[in-house]
Image (tube, rainbow, N blue to C red; front, side, top):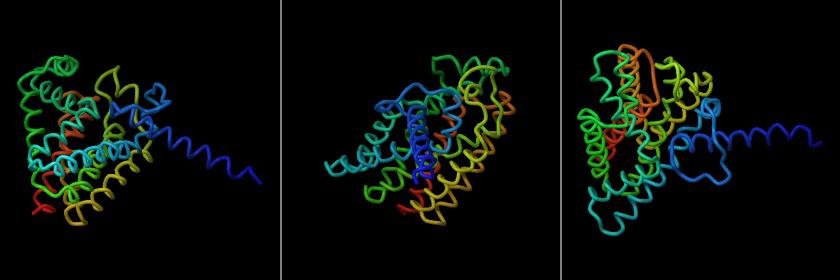
Length: 262
């Protein structure tokens, strides 16, 4: 009588463990009872990265709503919202964007990878961060209504993380050590599931036309970044994944500002 139910219980526990691993990997949010995760845990939990993004998006939506409720104009409210996501993620993805921008100024593959590991930030990195923060804050401010912005923020954080597992699946690690090597290549089913979740989130939040338009832009950016990485450093790194996420956030908010908020 009780035998058939056991696999379902195990499956639910595994799903919960995957979500916890995704949160530990991509945020700095406290997870009660969570233990250290390995590269294998991250590879298995790649499908749940969009769900971790949904948590960050809910935090962002709450901050934007509270800021607007307090009477702040859209732009400062948007600034506080972006700041809240920086705290939630520990600037993980912004760090990747800055490191990638700095590294592509290196002269050789070895030098580029060395720059990525350097904790110091250069001119290219500063400019990349400025552009990212400016575009995201100004695009969000164009969506003045927090009720309209809430589903967009949640979908944005989901979809921006939905291509990470696929990127790791398609591109080999650029180094012989580091995060990407530890994670390896996530299973195809995991990568496809994450991508599907991201697409569905965008279509729901932005509508079919704007959502699919954003998906098309992100697919083109995905392909361009993959080509650049193979040409410049011979594969992908954790910093590249962070840059991919940042590019996704900017793209989605700009599409939302141009279509949904118009």
